[in-house]
Every structure is written in structure tokens, then in C-alpha cells.
Image 1 (cartoon, protein in one colour):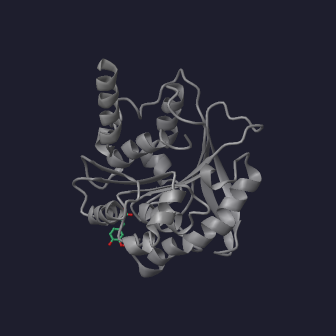
Image 2 (image 1 turned 45 degrees about the horizontal axis):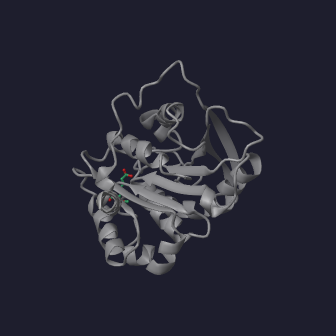
Image 3 (image 1 turned 90 degrees about the horizontal axis):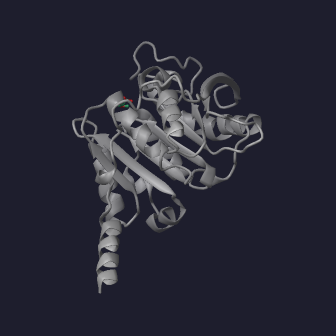
Length: 275
Ligand code: FER
């Protein structure tokens, strides 16, 4: 009888575990610790047939990186006012990830920080809302799939199956990650948007075949700050997924449209990936 009670209790915990049980990042998660091993950052330059120029991305190699190993890859996208340096400058992903490695909490992975504005002048200067600049965020799908990913897979020791590729991003990059990730489930098994922007496709366009998507996805993540005026693009996707029984993580956290939220999101998702 006691065993049955314990089993029932354990089962009820498993069934009721929800996204809101995720533990937000503890104090100090983004503070550099000098006495641990550190990863390293490369700048890569790839030929973009899509744009017709050489384009730049940053690439983080984990602590203890060995060219003889094979790593999964997270592609992590920036927002409308950013570029390939935005995460590094404002989100200290190298520090967050180094600390998680030191604590033994994440799988070794390479993280690529692309420039998601696929046009010749891809700087975040002038009016970042200009129609040609916004259109360049959509054009990045081809650049990512046909130019950047092949470059990374040719030049780095990485695994090249869909279970070893993740696509995540913040705001405009969150919209891109959902649009391109869910639109190319043969390429990516791990997909997520942080505070996704109005470029996010409608739920019906994102997931036209809920049964197929459910089978293919290893993780579908949707998060947003509760004070973010763009929250509707996250909630409407969540409502559709819930209605169509597509497993996903829906995480609403305290905060607005900023890096306090996105750093916490990176802290959480990096611990889920490739496990
Ligand atoms: C918009 C509001 C916000 C929009 C894009 C954003 C394209 C993107 C914000 C961000 O990336 O932080 O109307 O339209």
C-alpha cells in the first residue's frame, strides 16, 4: 500500500510538472568566475551566395573544446536593433555557458551567433525598422540554410543530423527561429523563441501539421516577459499548440523586452538542449 501511495505521488509530480516550475537563474549566473575553465570565441567569415558578400558571425567553442570530438550546434539569433555582436555584448552568453559547464549542467555544444539581417549593409544603423532591413530578416532563412550552416559544418567538428541542431533567438530573432525552425523540421529538432516579435508567422502557418511537428520536435520553447508589449505573439502560438496537443514549453517570466529576460532564457534552454 505504501509503495502504491509513493508511486502515485511520484507520478502526480511528473504529470503536473509545468514550465513555471523551471527555476530562474540564480544570482551570479552571469558573473565571470576566474578559476573555472573558459570557452573561446571565434569570428567566422563565410561566403554568402544569398547576399553576394562575405558575412560575419561569432562562434563560441565550449571549455575543453577538442577538434577530435563532434559537437551539436545552437544557432542563437539577435533582435531588430542588434547584429552578430548583440548577444555577446549584452547577454554575456560565454560567461553564462562557462558557469553552467563548470557546474556540469549542460552538454558540450558550439554556439553560433549569426547576423540575421541578410543584406549587403547588415549593420544595425539608421532606421532599423526600414522595410528593406525588416525584409532582410526574412531573407536570412536562405543564408542560414544554404550558406552559414554548410560553412559551420564544413569547418568545425560538428554533428550534422537534425537532433544536433537547435535554432533559438530573441524578439526578431525569436520570430526567425520559430519561422525557420518550424518551417524546416528536417534540419532542426530544437526550436524556440524568446519574446518573439511581429515577424512571427501565424500559428497556422508555423505549425500546419500538428501531428507531424509533435513527432519531429525534441523541444519547442516559447517564452516572454510578463511586461512585454509583444507578448501576444507568444501567447497566441501557445494557445494554438495547446489546442492541437503539440508538446511545448511555455514560460512567462517577470520582466519586459530586455536582456534580463533573455539571459535567463539562455540559462534555462541551454540546460535542456541535446539531452
Ligand atoms: C515591431 C515591433 C518590434 C516590429 C519588430 C519589433 C517588424 C522587433 C523588436 C526586437 O527585435 O526587439 O513592430 O516589426
